[in-house]
Each structure stands twice: as structure tokens, then as C-alpha cells.
Length: 368
Image 1 (tube, rainbow, N blue to C red):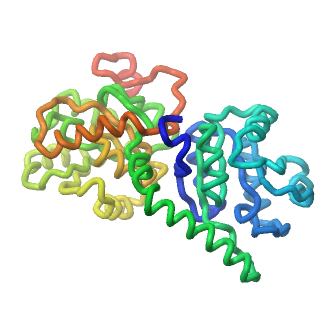
Image 2: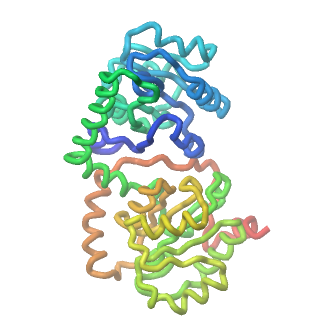
Image 3: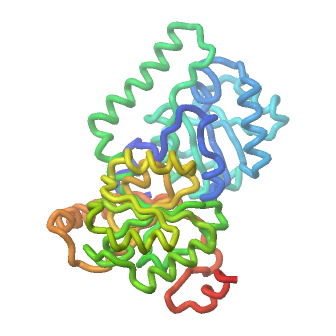
């Protein structure tokens, strides 16, 4: 965990409920343990009715290899009904005293789970998210569980919890959320230093490249031979490739013809970090965010845009310092942001399979 994020209860992800969380993507990123709060997370407040939908979710997570547990501040013994309903497969830990970290550390030791491989999901930012951030867990905030609630008081409590977070988020929290969006999953030297084979093996199907200072130097309108060779090999691997540039269409007339021959899509005036043009493109193409990688040289355009979509994001170093005045100004703020961002989950890298300009072994493997 980096900087103030250890003490600021900003989640790394938001989700409407426990059923909408992308567990497949969490598995892809190497997480092994799922911790959930109880009240307003897996059921209503002070409610012991565990739905079949919830039990099926537990079964699915366990079948996929996750270790699953409930970690609640409640002292009621009847919370342990979950252990009975799951035949002990889902452990229940009560009186956790969140956001204090002591008991949660003991739980992780008992489960033989690493902090860096653990996700905590809950509805309260001041307890669930706070304790998760302190320990360096991956934190997911959900809306309070209100399905089937008839009690007006319980509905009020749920609504107040959401209201309190919104007050925090839109006053102090928005700044930290924006900085969090600027944190990539990976930092790489250049586009040739990226493990594309691993991306393919992990189920990624589409790659979005920035152009200026990523594929070629600033304001060039052609692909280098090395970049062209890389694109050809990525196409052979089965990736769908899109170049999304904030540059105007008139700049890329000659490049557009070359890209057509290579079978590469081009989106100009993309308006990154705004989402609407890229959203329209990926909706038309039919790819899911968990299948897409965004690669670029700028934190506040490429990385922020990619993270806002929940793409896998890779920040590369700019190819040259020759940039526009506005970009040079942004670079100054990037350096400040880099001192405060927290680490994002990254793909495990057990084997060295990177595509390099001089890697004939990797090149042969890709073209077989």
C-alpha cells in the first residue's frame, strides 16, 4: 500500500452488489481469498435469511478455487448459520472490531492467505474499506443489500450509509479517487517490454494503443518498422487492435491506409480520458472490459481512461521529450501523482515471455 491510501477509505472498485463483482477478473489477477462483510452485504441488516442466490454464489466461488469467509463486527452466534448452510466451506468470523486490523490479521493467518492475494467486499467505507486499505487488501465497496427489505428503519439505515459515503466521496474523496484512477496495473519501458503472450493466456482479446510517444514519437504520422512488426505478430496471436489517439483525423490520413492493410482499427479525436467515444467503439465490437488492455504513455489520459472502464492498464515511458506545451504541463502533475498512487493488482509473471525487438526465440514462438 502506498502513501495516504493506507488511511483514506477509498475503495479500489465499486460494484452494485456481491453478485455483480467480476470474480473471473479477480481470479485472473491472482487473488485467492474473498472476504465479505455480513450485514447489508450478503443479507439485510440483522437479517438471517440467506438466499439461494447467495449460497449458489458461494458454491461457485469455492468451485473456482477461492477461499471464502465472512468477517463481521456482529456478535450474534446465528450469523454462523452460513457455516451450516455451506457445510463449513465458508467460515464465519464474528466480533472483528473493524476497522481495527488485529483480528483480521489473525483471520488471514488462520486461512493461510496473503494480504496481497485477498479481496474484501463490504458496504461500509469506514469499516470494511478502511480495514482493507490499512492491510493492503483489494477493496470493493458495494451498495447496501436491500433486496426484500420491508422495514422502513432498515431501509433508512441502508440509505444513510450510502449517503454518508457520497458526502465523503464528493468532498474529500474525489481527489483520491482520481489519483487512484491514474495508477496503472503495470509500468513498462516501452511497447516491446510487455508480456503479450501472458496477456493472451490470461484471456485478453483486445489491445488499445495510444499513438503519440507510444507507437511512435510525438506528432509523427507513420509506424516504425519495429512497431509494424509487433502489430503483425499481435494480429497473428488473435488480438483485436485499436489505436485510440486524441489527435485529429486529418493527421492520420496516410497512417489510416497502412492500418487498413494491417487490419488495425483507428479511432481519432478519442477525447481521452473521457469515455464516450471509446465506449461507443467497444460496445459496437462487443468486447467486455475484462478482455481489454489499454497501453499508453500518459497517466491522466490513457491510464485514467482505461481504469475508468476497468481495463487492464499498462503505462509505458514516452519515446521522446518532444511534446506539446499542454502535455509538458501534465507531465509535471504526473510526477506528483506518481509519489502518491497505490499499487494496482498485476498479472503474475512466472516466466520471461516478453516480445523484444531482438528476441528471436520469442518471435519464433509467436509465429509458429
